[in-house]
Length: 208
Ligand SMILES: *[C@@H]1O[C@H](CO)[C@@H](O)[C@H](O)[C@H]1NC(C)=O
Ligand SMILES: *[C@@H]1O[C@H](CO)[C@@H](O)[C@H](O)[C@H]1NC(C)=O
Image (cartoon, rainbow, N blue to C red; front, side, top):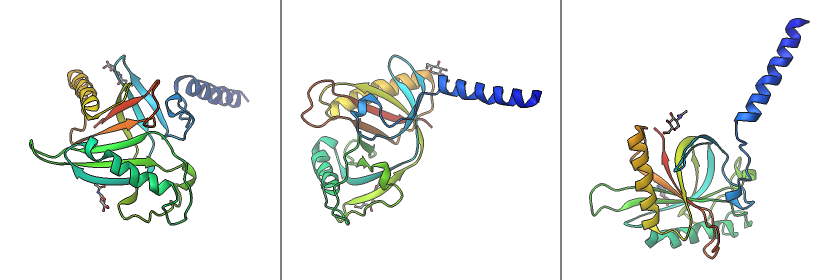
């Protein structure tokens, strides 16, 4: 009898503590404007960055090698936008999600092109059996669960703004002595091209 009470009390405590300390992994973070977005929890936070744990996620992706994302971003965006606008094996319109995540694997040396991979997250309902793309430039990819350091900023973000924030974020993390992935980083853009208030952009560096 006593042990049963302790057990019930124990699980109530665990549940309450979990509810109090774990931020929700909901799909309705304010920055996503009501669109589906990848689930994460915040593991640590300072005035300049936060550390997030993302669950594994499924994406439609398109990639190209180029010197700069600004040169090829529109082309990659069009490939992915056509995929969600019925240019797919089921001729189905697929809901937009947020953010648009771009992975940039930098080349070695001053004149080397980088691999630039843009991603639209698939709505959760399609994760088990993604609708196949018809354009061979579009592939379905999984991004495994990962922890990323995130620095947020506003405005209309160009390569130079992402790189500025990347430099600040990596500088903070190196000074703090946190091990980070230096072969690639991610940009995340949450707004359409003509949203002009409260724009939200992020750079992500993977925790190693
Ligand atoms: C969170 O970040 C702060 C600032 O760098 C650091 O001092 C602290 O150890 C971190 N906490 C955890 C749990 O990683
Ligand atoms: C780039 O896209 C091609 C298909 O167009 C794919 O075979 C290749 O794996 C992609 N590379 C990366 C790094 O995603």
